[in-house]
Image 1 (cartoon, rainbow, N blue to C red):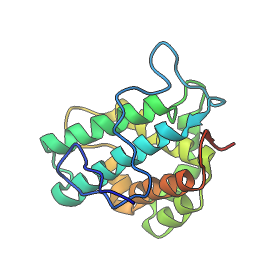
Image 2: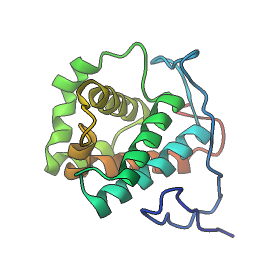
Image 3: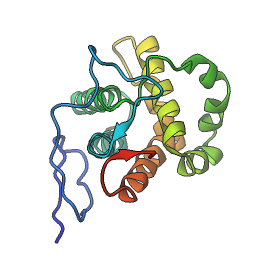
Length: 176
């Protein structure tokens, strides 16, 4: 029997799920133990990133990109999840990826298809590039990288694809 999960941000109700999972307060990785490209992503961490991603997409859908306290908080929580779960890596060349495959995600016609067919490694590269790009260009206004990702449909597709990959893993780690 499923139950509805409530987002901590009143921006988007989450769909019913079969196996409820609570909101997390800690992740597998942190500043003392950062993730590398060979680090594994736990199913629990990935599910929490999906939950936080849904909240962010809902905030963008309802409030746009002009800056809002709830959207700011949803983005901060999502970024915290990306770093904590290991999607942002210490040894990945994001700028190189940004100049190559990431260009496909800037084209609305391709973004949803590319992300929708991605494996865990590609999802990590995309999330890494968004997160590091945001931090490199953020000037306390707007949502660099993430607003564009939402406009093209790539952000919603990324969250959906990660959710699909979580559904096929019963326990353990994604990508095993």
